Image 1 (cartoon, rainbow, N blue to C red):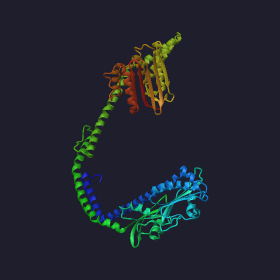
Image 2 (tube, rainbow, N blue to C red):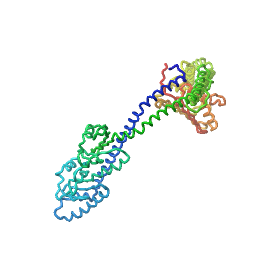
Image 3 (cartoon, rainbow, N blue to C red):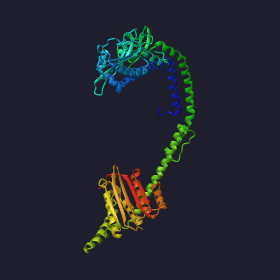
Image 4 (cartoon, rainbow, N blue to C red):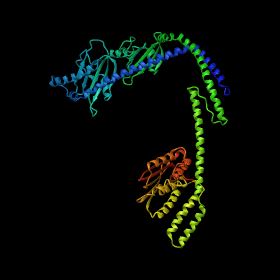
Amino acid sequence: MKRWNLKRKLILFYLLFLIPMLLLNLFAYVSSTRMIQNQVKDSLAVLTGQINTMIEQKLTDIEKISSAVYSPALLDVVRRGRYIGDDPVYVKDNREMNRFFSYIVNDIDELDGVYVFTENGNMFYKSVIDQMKAVYDPERDEWYGETVARMGRPVIFGAHMPWTLQLSSNRHVYSVAKSIRGIDGSRICTLLLDLKLNSIGELVASYKKQYDSQILVVDETNHVLFGDDLYDVGTELQEPAILTPVRGGMRQAGIRVGGERQFLVYDTSVISGWKLIGLTAQSTLDREISGLRSLNVAVTAISSIVSLGFLTAIYLTNYKPILRLRRSMKKVEIGDLSARAEITTMDEIGSLGKSFNNMLEKINELIESEYKAELRKRDAEFRALQAQINPHFLYNTLQMVSSMSVVHGLPEVDQVANSLAGMFRYSIDNATDTVPIEKEVEHIRNYLFIQRLRLNESFDVELDIDAEAAWCSILKLTLQPLVENIFVHGFRELHMKGMVRISVKRHRSRIIVKIIDNGSGMRMGALRKLKQKLYEESNDDAGVRSVNIGIINVHGRLRHHFGHGYRMYFKSMDGIGTKIMLVFPAIPYEGA
């Protein structure tokens, strides 16, 4: 197939597409069945999860009411000693507690009763329907011991008959209890809230209206909190088909209840431990599936016909543009870089043709740029050769002058001759284009020494060379043209003592060179022309003043050598001075 043309591949693609479509028609009914089953199962799982979250939120909101006990007035009441007989303080305290009870009753519609048992044996309560037992000791019931053992954490109890009341009817409640403790951790009182069990049913029923499923809510002892007309509230759930997968930790299961297949999903509350069980009958799934059976067959047939039309359109609209692009690529392969793809569409193929044309443009620009860079490099080398007026002869002559100055007792002449000889020796060493920064700086020291003698020490010099940068590589004769420009241009009309500052620092993987003077600077027009020449792609010297040729040549050499890792920044103000900054990679010198 790698050798096939596009036309044959499209035909094969359609055949490979048609066969699965025919097979898909055979399995359409099965696929639809599974899809609807999964949708119903997922919906049931979402429903149980949402109801569980809603019940947990309700229980959390109810438990937060216990914070009202910490008000100063109520704390005084619950910490009161045990009342004796008809204690008048009891009337006042009971009135204060009734305000607290009224706040809770108004906030919780499903409240059946609220009870406060203090550590000193006092009891306060408010029951919506019944009266409290004449003699009730909470410590005799298990709920009280479990609540105290929780150390201030709330305890939620499932369906039960109210522990504290004289019941006139057979009704069930669920409870939230909490041991109220002080800052030091000591127990102050115990709060018990009884809530109507049928409120769970109202909460669930309001949320499952749009679902054709049944919901069970059971507590940790498997007593029914909500039965959805399947089981009586308050009774213990004993259906083995439901309890077996729940006890086994099966989050989803297929079961059979009363001879009918059911799908079961359950979720457990991390707050109360209650289980939300959802049941969906298989007959519900079958009703959903039957309506899609014929629709799946029709959709499969229509999809086959439409797909054939799309494949035909793709062949007609894309084959010819691809063929034209291929012809253009063939021309480029044989070396014709002037070839261009014909773009007739705005789609991906048109975009590909445009990218192909842009690539050829960039290739041509790169070739031209490299060609001009090579010309600039050769031109700089030629100018450097022109500047060398028999350097070996001059070097040997300077060595002779140095020897004669020593013989005749002229130390200054000896120093000048040695400095100039060192400069020539550095210049005529053609072993390599790169040198350590330390040698380049030594060359500058010789140059500045001669200039100070020549100009009667009319300027000062500050050199700050980082030891970490001293043995990194730099192109030979990089700094001298930049420093020489100060004396040729910057100090030409200076009426005060000059200053030359040169610093070389290493910052992480970069070398930063700064050359600063307090000379006459440059005017805005000249500075703008120089920056334009520095930052444009071509560095031809035409139109550049001779005083700036050294800066242009240094910039061209460094850019050619370091590439994108090099930058030159140039700042100058008329009458104030000039600052040049070079930034290039810190490359350890590996020469001899």
